[in-house]
Amino acid sequence: MSEEYEVKRDNGALKALKSFFGYDSFRPGQKEVVDTILSQRDVLAVMPTGSGKSICYQLPALMLSGITVVVSPLISLMRDQVAALCASGIRAAYINSTLSAKQCSLAMANASRGEYKIIYVAPERLESPQFLGFAQKADISLVAIDEAHCVSQWGHDFRRSYLSIKDFVESLKRRPIVAAFTATATVRVKEDICKLLALDDPVSFTTGYDRPELYFGVESVPDKESYIIDFIGRRAHKAGIIYCATRKNVDLLCERLVFHGVSAVKYHAGLTEAERNRAQDDFIYDRCRVIVATNAFGMGIDKSNVSFVIHYNMPLSIEAYYQEAGRAGRDGMDAECVLLYSYKDVKLGEYLIDISAEYSEEKPEEAEKMRRINREKLVKMDILCKDKDCVRANILAYFGEKYKDNGCGKCSSCLKKNNEITLDSMKLIIGGLVYKTGGRYGAGAIVDILSGKRTEKLAARGYDRLFEFGAFKLHDKASVRAIIEEMISEGFLERTQGDYPLVKVTELFMRESAKRAPELGRFPAPKSVRADQELIAQIKGWRTKTAYKLGIPPYIILTDLTVNMLAIDKPTDMLSLLKVRGISEKKAEKYGKEIINIIKKHKNMP
Image (tube, rainbow, N blue to C red):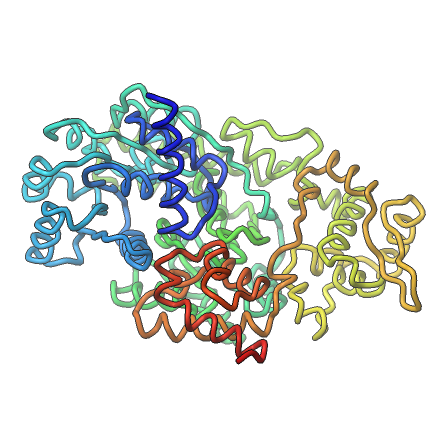
């Protein structure tokens, strides 16, 4: 392949990325995956939730000659992905059980005429004679498999229907490129994916499992309900998911939250389909801020502004935990993942695994094999919860990734040794907070934030949404103030001159923090902190009304991160609007005038 062609392809991919998706550059790993697919190679990509896996197959789909078939396990994901593509000016469709036979036929006919570049289907659909007939005549250039771990019995969500994908690909008139994507896969699961999907000499990408924006906490508390009510109460306006192992726990917890004034809905398989859809839509459309659910909820949910995930019961495997916890912080903002551990949950997990094996539709030997596998995973999950070492490092080690020896500084184990935060960690947290606040405050205000004191001034700047807010609520304020003074004497912090001296970090702190905890050293202050909060509220209000009119989730119009960027940059013309990350040409064309008018009105401009 010539160098000239490579340059043209690179330019074409970047141009399409900005034109359709509103991004000027790729996230880590995306470009390599896109280039590999465009060079006609099979791919196995293991990329963490929120890293932009969908663009890795949607972008090549626009640049390849034929149709891309995306195999996806959930209707909700198909619906949201297609809505987002259409909003970006890309014609796409889905074929699933929510459509009538006539609607399915029409979608396939339109695809055959080249009206759709991307079609989403459930794995069960690949065995349908009608769909097979369409596929064997169509020009399919790429088959992308989302949640590819579902093909493996060693994966945390094995689905037998995924085993039909291999036969489907082999039945086509010419073999397409096959690209498999997942967020969680051990070495054994990766091997299964390659073998069971018959990937042809695939290029494997693992961009890393770490999610540095997530805090991981494992807590043993005497009263889980009271802990959760207090937790949510101290995070006003934040959206979150609470996972329970049983329907009964979902019902009871949701009822108690509503009693205490929390805007919450519930989701589990015992509800009717209409009830589940209504609960899911209420959460996705921001009509409620908390959803209490079993693991029946979540896979394929693309809501970007989930600020916390709480596990009321211990999940049955580390894969399941990381997948569910990873639904927080998809917008790249700080988010919290808290697991409430109890020994009773281990017994409950054993019971659920045994019941599942007893009522399995698999052959007895297969059911027993799955029971044994799931019991092994439960043991490893239990060990993770009991281990006093870094939670993040233990999770990453499970997936075969080594983390630094001194821990992450951002999990319950690193921040808490025998119920006390180490002095070294406290200094890192204090310095990180001072950096994020941009040297705007004195030591007293910094202590207020760390103690969880919510004032109007601090809330207006978004500091009550930081990871550090309330981090030292159990510590005496005088002792925290003393540590700040010690950091000043050590040269990690310094006071500015003036009648009301402020504190700011020094170059020495930045160098030392980068050595001790690299993720604390790359603190570009969150956009929400520097953004105009009043303007954010105005843009979100418009977004909600517009989404309601169009019948789509608000984040499809603009993600929270893009809203924050708009409130920082405050573009007042189309050229500057297009420079904002997340604003594509299609979105600028469709919503640009309204967004600009809101910003101009806010700035009192004509």
